[in-house]
Image (cartoon, rainbow, N blue to C red):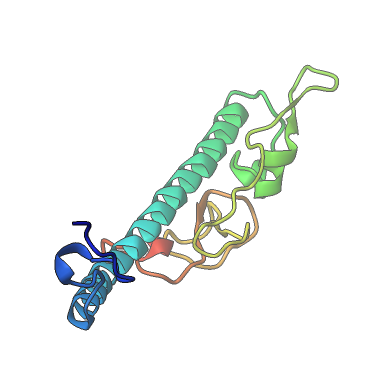
Length: 163
């Protein structure tokens, strides 16, 4: 005898496949927990990367200022006496200074003034040789040191402006 065919198809073991409400709530809860852990870690990582960039930019500018001072001490570039051999501003490091003995040669100490990763601007705090060591106002005579104008606090608890 032939088996009769019915219009119904049998599902696997008679149970409908899919997710229950409890399974969906559990999955969403796990996703929310993972997200709430990942976001703070991502924020800390972004801040850490900005701090590394700030340190690199400060080191680059301070190295350029030191090279300018070395060139002036060696007598390779003309300097004003009241400047103590330091550059008058950061733009001088980018535009370059004429080298003594060369007709048109200029030596450039920086390619460009870096953007402060904390403020998003190229406006850096400057100190001159005549300023106090912890001064936050620039006397304008020369550029002895640079610092960020950000008032933020680093991950280690120090102020960015003190770096």
